[in-house]
Figure 1 (cartoon, helix red, strand yellow):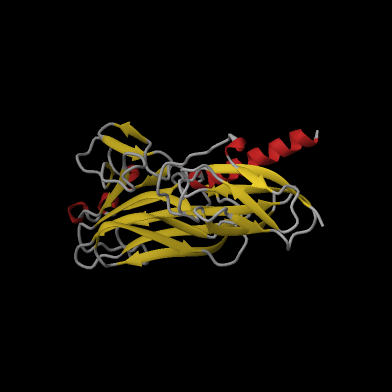
Figure 2: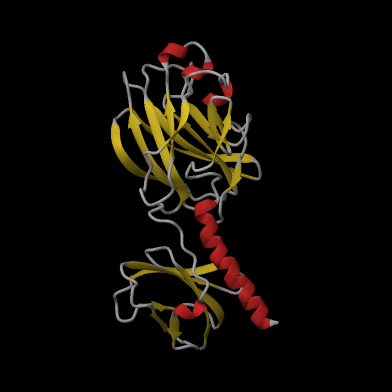
Length: 296
C-alpha cells in the first residue's frame, strides 16, 4: 500500500510540473478552426467573432512567425484596421474563453503560480498602446490584475514576465489587444501585436520533456540527515531546480544549483524526519522524481 501511495504522489508531482506549462488553453496558438474564410484560435474569442466569416479581412490571424523557433509552428497576430471603423472588426482584441470571457475566469491557474510569462512583438502606428493582461480570481471573484502596456515598438520577439502579488488565486483570464481597451475605445493606427507561448512562472524555451524513468538519476545517502547528493546523467548541464515535497504533496523546499557541480546537492537539515519526494527539473525541462527518508 505504501509503494502504491508513493507512486501516485510521484506521478502527481510530474503532472503538476507538466500542466504548469499547458494550463492556459491553446497557450501557443497552435490550434485553429476554419469557418468560411475565417480562422479562429481554439479557446479564444475576439475580433474575428464580430466579423462576417465570409469577409476578406480578419483582425486575428495565424502567423508562422513564432517564438521560440523550436516550439510549435504558429503564433497569433492581432491587428487594428482604421478602414473598418466604427465597427468592431477595426479593433484588434482577443481574450481567453467564450463570448462572455471578458468578465469571468476562463481557466484554472496552478497552485503557487507566481507570474504570467510569454513572448510578444509590437508594431505600433500613431502611438497606439498595446496591452497584455491577466485577470486573476479566487472562487469566482476577481482578486488582482497584472498588465503589460506599451506604446514602444518591439519589432523582435520580446519576453515578458508579470509578477503576481502574494494573494490566493485559483483561476484567470487573459486579454490581448493592439490598442488601449479602456474608456472610449480608440485606435490611432493599424498597429499589430503578436503573442506566443504564454505560461506561468517560467518562459517556455523548449518543448516540454517529461521523464518517468526514475532510475535515470540517483540520490544518496538515503536515508539522509543533512545533505542529499544527486547523481545526474552525463549529458546534463546548466542550472537544475530541486524541489522537495512532503507526503501530502506540499512543497517544503526549493533550490537552484549547477548541474556541473560535483555532485549537485541540497541541504535538508531544516526539515523534520520523515518521508519526502525530490523533484529534479533540468534546464531541458526533463523531470525526475525520487523518494527519500530524512532521519534524525
